[in-house]
Each structure stands twice: as C-alpha cells, then as structure tokens.
Amino acid sequence: MPPTTSPPCTPTTSLSITETINGSHRFTIQGYSLAKGIGVGKHIASENFTVGGYQWAIYFYPDGKNPEDNSSYVSVFIALASEGTDVRALFELTLIDQSGEGKHKVHSHFDRSLESGPYTLKYRGSMWGYKRFFRRAMLETSNFLKDDCLKIHCTVGVVVSAIDCSRLHSIKVPESDIGAHFGMLLENEECSDITFNVQGEKFHAHKLVLAARSPVFESEFFDSLEEDNREIVITDTEPKVFKALLHFIYKDTLVEDEELSVSSSSCMSTISDTLVAKLLAAADKYNLPRLRLMCESVLCKDISVNSVAKILALADHYCAMDLKSVCLKFAAENLVELVGSGALIELRRMICIDVPTIFGLRFGP
Image (cartoon, rainbow, N blue to C red; front, side, top):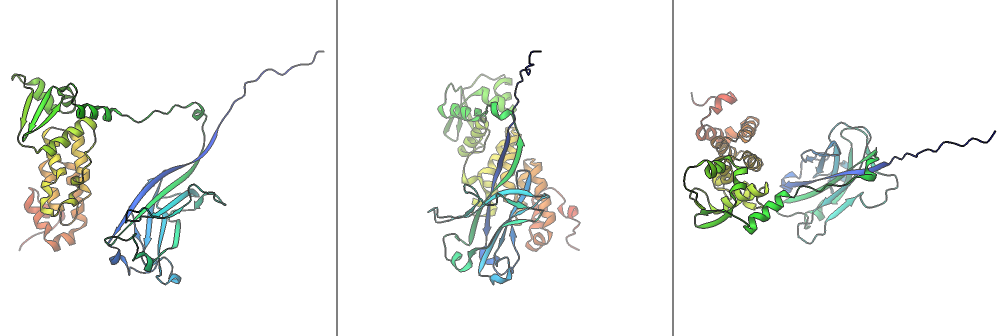
C-alpha cells in the first residue's frame, strides 16, 4: 500500500501580552510645619486614586514610620487601598523640586531591570515605599519645601497579562479632534455670520454652531420674527466671560485661566465676581447644562467653612443642584466648625432654605 500523507493543516496563533496599566497622582501637602509632631508611625493620606482597577493612596509620615529612625527621616509609601490579592505593580515616587530647576528626587521601578520582577502587594493595606525617604533636616532647608508646602508625584503601573490575538491586526483610532477644528473655526472667524458687541468688544461667530449648542441661541436666531440682524449687543455679560462662553460652545472645554479657581480670589466675599461664577450664570442664561456642571465641578473644589455659604447661594440662584447637594453635605459634616464661625447663620440668611431645620438645630430661645 502506498504511504499515507497527513492532511494539510492551518496553524493557529495566539499572543500573550504582559504589560502595565499606568496612572499618576499628584499629592500636595500644605502646612508641613503643622504636620510635624503628629507622631512616629502616623501618616497623612492622599485621596484614593484608581489605577488598573485598584484603588491606591499615598501615605506621608512627617515623623517617620518606625521608632528606630528617631524622627530623623520622613517616610513615604504607596498603599493598596482596595481589596486585592497578589497585586503586582511598578511604582515611582517623585519629590518635586519647587525651584524650577527640575532637580526632583525620584525613586522608580520603571525603565530599569528588576531582579525579582514587579513588587507584589498581598492584601489591602500592603505598602511599598521608603522608611528613610529623606532626612528631615535636609528636607526643611531644601528647594523641595516651598511656602511650607511639599509636592509628591506618584505613578503606579499595575501588571496585567492577557491573551490577545486582535492586537496583531488592530488599528488605533485617535481621539476626537472635532473640538480643535471648531476652535480653529472660531479663532479664524471663517464664514462668520453673526457679531456680538460685548461692552465694545467684538466677537465673530456662526449662527448654526451657536444654535446647535444652545436652545436659547436657536430660538433667538430662527424663531424670532424680527428682522435678521448680523450684530447683537450684549450688555449683561463681560467680554472675558463671553469669550469663555464661546470657547466652550466651540471646543466643549473650559478656557484655561487661573481666574477659574475661586482660591485665586483674594477674599471669599468676591466669589460671585470670579470668572467661574460668572460663567455659571452664562450657562444658566443660555441653557448649557454641560457648562453648568463644569462650573459646578470647579466651584466644588473650593468649598470650605468660609466659602460654603456663598457657594451655596450661587448654586441655589442658578439651580446648580449637584453643587447645592455637595454644599449641604459639607455643611452637615462640619457643623461644629460652621456654628463656631457663624457661617451656619450666614447659610440661613443668604438663601431661602431652612438650613437649621435640615440639620436639626434651633437658633434663639
């Protein structure tokens, strides 16, 4: 009998990829001199941040982590802040040089060979870092400490492995650039068909773009029976605010301006005069819910005992319900400080809401 031959076969392939999912967090420690003396083994923690499906936190020990160091060193660690078993990761801790010379102090697993591979965290609360991160005496006379403030940058790379055949034939799609293109349209004033005169300053725009973004503009341009007008005079908005409004309408982002931060104001009584507060008013006027939420998010970051009453008044006036909820939650969690500072009475006076009733308090006899 003739020898048999094996039937032809088509080989299959697969690909195992081990890589890191990276994420970073910047932790600012304001009031370092007041943190000293907290005690050996006691730390100040950053907010939790998420990388690779796990939550992490930076722990800073002003008096050191272990008694044997006799408070001669500050300690810095990265901790696994969520449930996890045998989480393998790479870490980088950077103490920022605030002189502007870029001479940062860096401890990094990235871009170097590790004899035993990535570090393994066994359970929630496991940490990686340095007990002797920096000698305190040297730190306090260095450029790392400025205006009683330290800045620590942390990068976490969670190691993951997966079988992935599609990557052999994948095509990467870039992020949307429609905002950039519309932004160029605004900046170049191409084919503009409407001009806004805002306190003497002229802004050229496009009716279709404005109408697509704002129902108020849509009604003003296309539902009105008045004669078509190529120039509209705006008297209730400042030029800088209107420019920021157009920036959002065309680019779907907030304008980059340090005045957007309430904390840039020299006095908390001027919160309503900040750019973000005026932009919130514009969002309300032109019915732009996304811009409203963006402004609420900025204002939310500056809520404090001294500012909560005024920010709550803004939220109430412009129907910023998410910001209003955060203000009331903050007030409920800080009742002692609010009562002591008199801010709770201001809350009651500034908005039409029975704050004392909400918190179970009574004023007067």
